[in-house]
Length: 299
Ligand code: NAD
Image (cartoon, rainbow, N blue to C red):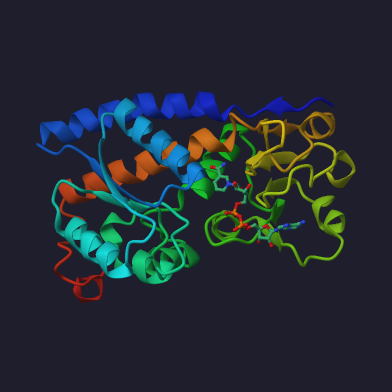
């Protein structure tokens, strides 16, 4: 069996075309969706990710506002700026590019973003909402994976899903989202003994470990759907995922390539969440940030 390719680039392009209609509908109501991007320091990977996000905004006619800080900036400076953005009516989404330098408490910064503008979905309120299956802004990478899975037409309910990787931004929210869709979910991580023992039972295997070549063909069930979230730069400059693509392709029914799979979807879902936020503000579903979210009526 040679797997069919799940084409993230193509799906991302289709979704972005539809975004333009939503932007036009918002502009009829006098709203231009806006995303604030906070970038601290000069980490080369972060700069590439941020450039991709800004480009995606331009393509979707979403305004982007860059807020750059030197690597030596203080936590207070960041918190003050986020406080201003929380109140800024032109900003519907606030994204803080991670990682942050060691003098900054990441959790404190993420918790300072008002819930209604938390388009990355990392605020504890949105994480909790994900746990109870009622998320406003699902985290972008697992959200993108969910849409990629939908393109296969295969219902995840009752399927054995194995998620390799248990980070807060990919593995854990991915597992929660698939559990919400009634899959039977196993989460593996660096301390998991005998990884293959778990992966071989997966009808759907989602890999987000950041280890090139981690998943070999003999670890994959014949006919499985394999989603490779990993992005690794090899010494020769090539970008590869965590899955041995060529070999696994001969066993799986569906597989995502790297690049061109999950990556383009992550950026696209950030725009989706920003548009959703602008629509919520336009419809009066989002609340003024001066009023803490725990004092507003239940949604
Ligand atoms: P992370 O380092 O925060 O977490 C990695 C997880 O993988 C951990 O839970 C760790 O225990 C687990 N792990 C590590 N080695 C393992 C092994 N040998 N066996 C089983 N589990 C193992 O990383 P992250 O931020 O979740 O990102 C994971 C990968 O996904 C990276 O390559 C990253 O670049 C990529 N990523 C891609 C996108 C995208 O848009 N495609 C978005 C986010 C992250």
